[in-house]
Amino acid sequence: MKYTTVTTLKMVVGLSWVLGWGGLTGCSVHNPASPAAVTPAPKSFRVMSYNIHHGEGMDGKVDLQRIADLIQAEGADLVALQEVDKGTQRTDRRDLGAELAALTGMTCVFSNNFHYQGGEYGNAVLSRFPVKRWTNRHFQMLKPAEPRGLLQVVVDLPGGEMVFMSTHLDFSGDGVNRWSSVGEIEAVLPQYAGLPVILCGDFNDVPTSRVYRRLSETFDDTWVRAGAGDGFTIAANRPNKRIDYIWVSRNAPFTPVKAWVPSSLASDHLPVVAEFQFH
Image 1 (tube, helix red, strand yellow):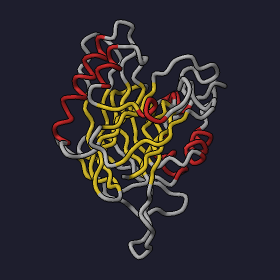
Image 2: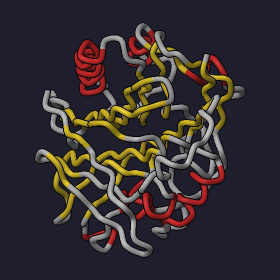
Image 3: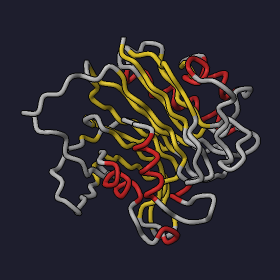
């Protein structure tokens, strides 16, 4: 599978650059601190998974500022986003990933899963860590459905590289496409042998499902290890299901020490957040 390398650009106040590599679509708008600035390596980092519903909140308004404020308030260092628009009619041709990157001071990688309303629609990742390379896998849909994919981003954590993934599985009731997609997720893992993996997303299935049980054979559910309560993420105004997850591979050199679901009406989903501590 062909990888794409991200080159960080210097950021000019008020101006962001949107880049595409290798036939995929990406965005990068953050310049890390100068190499001369020495800061101690962090002992922990935070991950968020958030289906942002193309920026539309429960009030029907598209407002990226409140999503950015939530990301900042929760101290997220890596954010897996789903339902992200770029250039679509419904969001006034805006590049939501690039705008969120500018608002949060993070680097963005966006992957298009299908063309929609004259633009693109897919998953994205925001990162405070350097992005080394990335790729996107389009899932094979066994039954007619909205195309979905698996965005894979290799980031440079203190001490080594990590694979950070953002995905959004099909919502169809019979689960055929979801089951097939989990098999495709498993199929990409061997190419990252030796690297820790964090897999995030909207899996459109609850913890009693066969999809959840299958993922549990390879990954640990951070909510089970470090969360408290039900962890419901949908719907945002009256949550009654847990379908958004942060999974971590068992070879990771870090451990989830806390997981929580912040309250917000900025989307129809609630985000799930986990804090990891390095061993």
